[in-house]
Length: 306
Image 1 (spheres, rainbow, N blue to C red):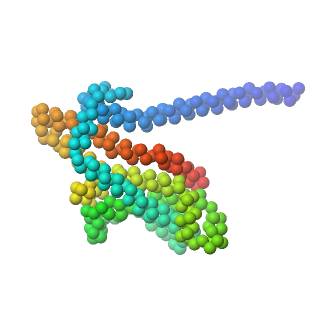
Image 2 (image 1 turned 45 degrees about the vertical axis):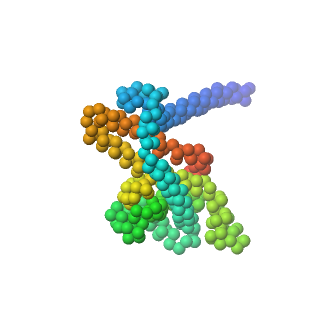
């Protein structure tokens, strides 16, 4: 009888526990959905606003669907032929810059992860120091000029290819996710550091390489400040700088004009604003679904094992 009574007392507790777990799970799902809406809606709003009349957007009439559907923003934007030059340059900067960044940062991260590297802690401190302090804009400009990189293609992909944060992330991944036993086994087979890095470490590090590649590619795609400072040849301008110049020109025309001409220029400036965001953002966003799996895996592996 005693065992039966104990079991009867435990049963309600288990039901209460399951009910509370179910309620917590539902609450988490509701919270996740709300956060998803909060994060996605601004992007959705930009999309529908780019197809709406500026007056409707300004008056708060655009919520879920475009108001007074129009393609005027995209049509006006595509009238500028230098946009295609900007696309070409940005794609080249992104591809070449990402490739150089991966070679530099992944190699440096692997070297810093090796315990047999002389002065490893000293070099790590040097990289970390650059995350908080730099030489400043004027010394950097003078250095680039003295190396004859000013107003060249390489100035957009070479001088700023080293990213200390990416190196630290990749180094942490190598230290926490690549077993040291693999290196010992490779040494027994006569494998050196370079061969071990190329044939064993790289294939096992697809996750973190994808993460670093995505971060580097997004940085190059969105970069405009370096082009603004170190480029004067308009044929080398990236897309972001060209779009910025178009917006600035239209805003200046609307500010300097009078009467109906000013109103037309202001309308075009407002309607192009959202179209510019879509044109500049959508291409790089299309890449994310292909690396999402590696992105999540690369971030979580280092977080769990570190």
